[in-house]
Length: 506
Image 1: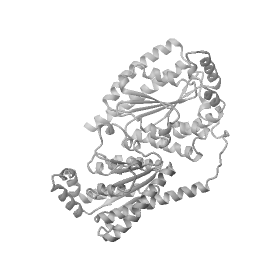
Image 2 (image 1 turned 45 degrees about the horizontal axis):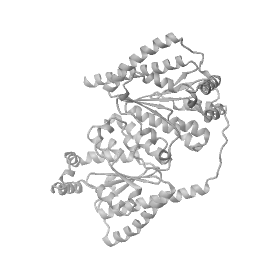
Image 3 (image 1 turned 90 degrees about the vertical axis):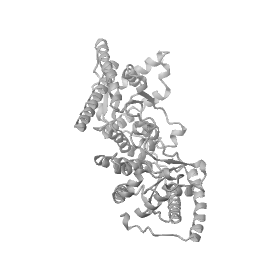
Image 4 (image 1 turned 30 degrees about the vertical axis):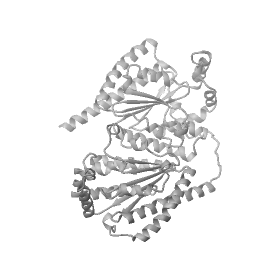
């Protein structure tokens, strides 16, 4: 593919100057309009070494308001980044609505430079490409404009630029031994890049090849690509807004998920207090040991808790963490999104709390709010919550691909038990803070929530991130089941990791 690109193209200075003056003025206007429209923009510069990414980024941003953009350089991952899924550091840098994020290389390192260096193994490539396209589609579906630029120069041109940089002590540091190796094996590195382009060139995030031999031509094409795309996206959104009609569907329970997973849960299960204390003590001791093991083996753990109001999430979390080293876990309570969180993709705030390898992240309510409370209360559109099932599955798959144990608990109680607990809280001064008017209002929508939960359980329980429905009418039984499930999952993962390491060392 790339060998068909004409790298000899040039532009005369007068033509370049006139075109750039017109487009630079246009870009300043477009940036302001994108801010007013609340459109987040990501511009990615990638390509061959010494193709001029830094120079071209500087040319692009000269006419932009510096208060409205951020530039990120992607180098070798830091220790903090190595201990998390490879997309974590990019999810946390995704721009808020109305802002622009510019990346000097990015998440493509995983399937490009790291692949060339042998850090990404061939069997990891399919999942890496899938993770990348899912990442870009989720952002695009949420309204982010993604512009991907691949700067291309020939082997001879690259070698000439490397020599020029290496000849000066001020710039010699910019050329590494790895750069020279990629020039020496230029054809192999080019094939890796061609596969990357083919695998990730999509309608929602297409690649634009920039012929970068002539720097003025490259700058002109980059400016033209960015301004044209932003103008198109602004016009498209104006048309969509004009055509949109306020069609708010009333939430009415359907029969499709009425007799679903929850209808088959046996809520009569219980434990005596004596048996509860004995089993919980034994399980907590095992969990304490396993916590040290997952740290030693660098296994990340993600545990999510959902359930009915007063379902016992807090009590289960306390029993789960009571004997864990507090330096090795974090409990993340999830409330309504704040003003900063609202201007990002709904998954952004959860990506910010992904645990590093060897640590445990516990979420008291999770990203599943999208398909429950946001769905029922109308805080998102029908299209948004319907596509969230796949987005969530993809996020959890990426965590699992990075070696994480992912468990999700639904703490289930019946309506009568919930009412009993609500009244108990209202009558107890020490627990009154736990009950709100909103809890009572949510109770009136029990049937809607039950339908939503049944659909959620069916569509998002996977082999790599299963849902565990916990029979919660008896708190003793529920707490023991939660801790036992975590213990068994960690033991299975530790066994798997040890077996893989033993096999690799043979």
